[in-house]
Length: 236
Image 1 (cartoon, rainbow, N blue to C red):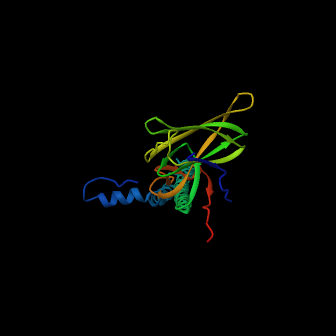
Image 2: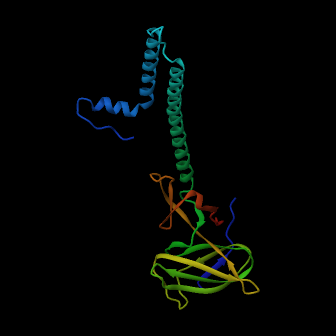
């Protein structure tokens, strides 16, 4: 039979618009909001001091109101500074995600899923909560059944490799195929068997957020990776 079931190898701001005479000034104001609020803060202090120095002794200004405005203005300034710091943290996190994604390029990994690209061979990992006799069905992108068979699975992980041959020996062409597995216990109750796609990470899209790994024509985020499978080296 052209199908092999084996245990897997464990491994450890947008610019402003306006007339040509003032566009640079407006753009500078939009991109330097923190600096602008600081300038306004100094202007506010100047106005406050001037009003306090020139107030009418018979009708003094409400200093409590000025104090509240001062506190509110300072709060806005601190919030803008906090936003800038948060933006820096987000940029650092994006950079870390990109670095993490690049590590997987060229490695064989297993990710959650049932659909993979077949070309000469395709590998899925089956995860069963208990030993069972499972029915494995592989269908093409058009919904045709390419292969179906029964296999004994032990509790835990098992690797299912398909060489592209159907039950009648026909060789199926390269393309996208989906595997489903169903099992039953000794009492005939259904057993949930999860599937993982195994393949080599051939590229990573760093323009996406988070970065996307390309595995067998499908894209996945790094949080979908369940394990890294070390290749078997042959001794001479």
